[in-house]
Length: 565
Image 1: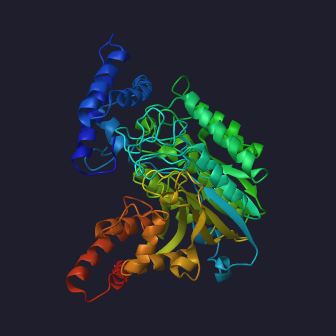
Image 2: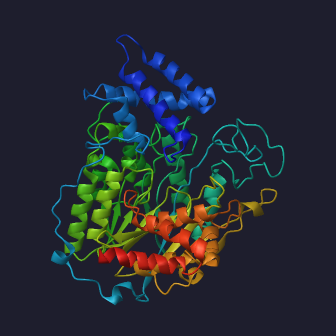
Image 3: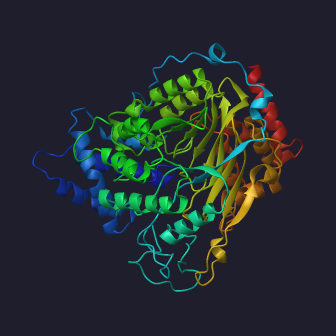
């Protein structure tokens, strides 16, 4: 179901969701799950025009969870179910814990704990470490070179699909731009390239190992993917520590993560147990307890650098369990706040890793609000944040809620290994200053799928270096904020950003609407607070009509005007 649009298709999704929920919630005694499945599959085929096998896989994968929700003994309505999992103006819950809960912690205020940072916090000390980020691998065991990239299913280039009818339609040994994920050859190629870098301190693997064939997943299949990809990492990277996190595709059904206290066949404890079994070789024993509870953990490394790994997948709207248990799932945000407080007291710096980036339309707005409060409270303790999920190269800026002109932190989105959809594969190499643990710069590496001829080996290149590409003096949050404002008028600068956003792919283009959306996303860490986006839209239209004042200048004046109110 599409929960990202306000158009008619989205309204249909809301109606379809409510019909499915009604089938389950109002099931008369004696009616079987099979009868509900048959009706739901018919609904899926009729409303969405999808093949029956796809509908069957998705419906049957989710029905067990829906029936378990019903059996919890808590009153439910179709409106509550669908308003939670879709959360949009067309389909939402108006009040209750789904939309209004707070992290109950007492961590004081910034002025009580620390003083403002000196300029030296941001300066390159000359002593750096190198960190690799790979994300969104999406390994497809059924990928086969020579198959069509233009099929009727949501995922193509697969062994059970037709052969390609032309070279442009043909899945190469190393990927295709259309609706295709990646074979092992691509993962091997990326890891082989990473081995060529000298003195890699550690690798951040920020989630999503499993392919987008969500109608075909199962526990056994997903576990096998975790195992196979982990073995490749160990084979190629040897003793280099790998810090892993879970993506929303690792579980079955996709996006569904149960609370830790749920037992039985719908519990997702198997995901955590299997993942740490195959990916936990670099983690201390102390990380296991919270990981097995909810997929999150923390440990100290490199003297005063603390790694905090979050499972932001639990906050997804499409996680059915949030219908019943939406308040701080698995106690994760309370744990995050207390862990950051202890880090602050110990003069540690923190890297936060999570799969879904802040401000994503995929996550619950109440989570975004509470998360932003924590990030801004500990802005001088958090040195950097690293995400994936979107498959684009991106950044997200946090702004002070009491001073919209002041940027407080930056989250870096590492792109993806998969080419799904219209992007090239990539990974990033970050330079991080020892001691302050700030990102001082990063390089993005990629290869161009359009250059693959006769299944030739990929030619990995450095696509760009962040500071050099955009003329940045530093990677301070305020400097990156100025860079984003410059892009409002400087089309040549935005052209560079958009090209790198797609990781060197020329398969897509932008218009003013898409440019505005990208800039809005960068400046939005909480969907419900669209201050910067609204101002950008407000000042852009008069500029296009009059041309007297630059958009950037008008935007800066508008932000300053907010502070005077």
